[in-house]
Length: 326
Ligand code: F6P
Image (tube, rainbow, N blue to C red; front, top):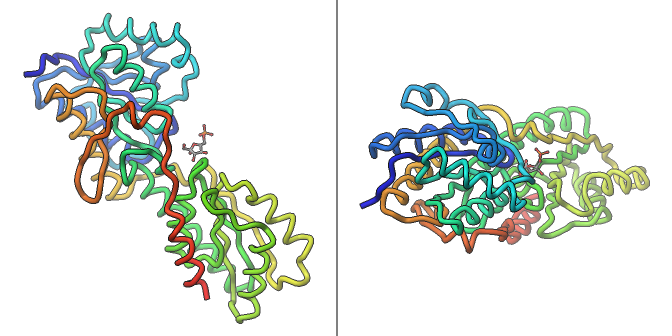
């Protein structure tokens, strides 16, 4: 039997579409256990300063369709310092918090591991558009980010075809190429450039030239922001070899656009399932795990294994994308 009376929930790191669905599900699942629920404002920063609000079922109504996080989020370097960490623990004790659900990406789950080590009952919920977390096939927010990137690709293709142009679309993902890879495959890109398997500017130019010679009316290059020989290097090279390539190249950097707006149905359902599963783990007396999805099944991984690790995109799909770009 668990002895939890009061659970807190926080969202930390970069916001991701679906975080609100996770807050709603964790809150209502905890209320169903008979626990009180507190929402922490602005991630670990709010934990340090003790900014928490009581959450009832109605407080989390009407938010499932909203992007971002109603609790606010932050990147908090202070929490990594011993003094900040001690402050956070003191605040949790003072507010009588017995358990914590932590929604966020890599850095966030490293933080939740440290709280678990300090004796707090913690369950992590993986949420980042980057989809680079060890311990889950998929993270909350990535499906929306892929679909927003894809919509941009589809729209740019319109002008690309009308004007026989090349378009380079740069998307987010930090050091992981997952968003670029999936959106590039779904959008029929001629070239995909990701950190896991770099295609140099020279090869990008060659593939554009080959596409032009094959009579393509447009060409799309999708670049992950983390690629070392990324947008700037490609643009510079194409500028210098413009006459031999055929296509003119225009550049669109999507940036934070891919992180905003309403979550897809898949992200809402994923967030709902994972957050409810996190509460379930705490109710069973389990702490120090992150819930995740393997295939269609919920699984758990010790936070000790998740902390500090990343998961790269599957580079084998790149070859498929190259073959299909004929
Ligand atoms: O981790 C999510 C993410 O959006 C990355 O894809 C990106 O590199 C980074 O956050 C941007 O961080 P910030 O919003 O702090 O500029």
